[in-house]
Image (cartoon, rainbow, N blue to C red; front, side, top):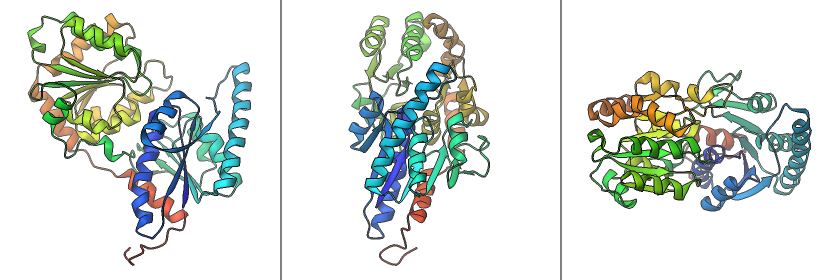
Length: 378
């Protein structure tokens, strides 16, 4: 059975679809059917990297983000038509039973092509604030879902954020996880994650924070696992070495559950995926929201964790020196206070659990006519 999954431009739009497919495959197998998952993604390098690493069957659409400037708006419209045409040809050839979209600029042409072909479609809005693309897409989809309640889509069901099993630390030993990165298995570890797009302010701000406090006894024993998102890898590694910090610096980590298992505390953006992973893995966080979003949706993403007492938010001040100083007021008190970190972890563990991937897989199964399990169960 062919199911289409649309979303790309960042790993945060692709991985939730992978999570749903991970749940849907066994559901179909119970019914004597096999899943063929096809991913409609962007033609950006980050999507190609994710699809190659995950072994995904992908169709790259030449879509571009929406724009308001007249010249860019014209390019967006032209790119939308080209992407819809590519999607339409693939949909006609593959005849998918249903399509799930995660929003963003790739989803629009894929959903448009699927609807023209009579394919049932669903949208999940991943952020706490529905963006323009999500609001527009929602009007034409057969079903609408939210990762965060109150995101602003009418008649939408809240199911949570779909997470892959590889994103979960459950069953992983923290010491073994640290040793796997070449770190001391017994030392406290700060996970610094710059996201799949490689936030430069985090990649430069965290080493600057440690460099400014090279002799601070409160940092004694701490080590860093820093995932750069592929950018500034050599520079970041050199900066930690110059500061005398024990650090494992990697570009990417396809199995984020390993990184979360190693972490006592995390410093990261508050994109929807990172927030969901921090919550599911109960890792206290200092969040630095992307500083140029007009709607402030990253702060909203982090809101439930902050309200529960499991995270703090500090502004990204962009300049490395400014971020280093600001983190002295937010990150440093947590690094030196294990009791507070333990309380934050307990607060995250007390938050209600969700299983969005299973809920969305069940919707796809129902719309695709999956039928009962082959052994008669369900």
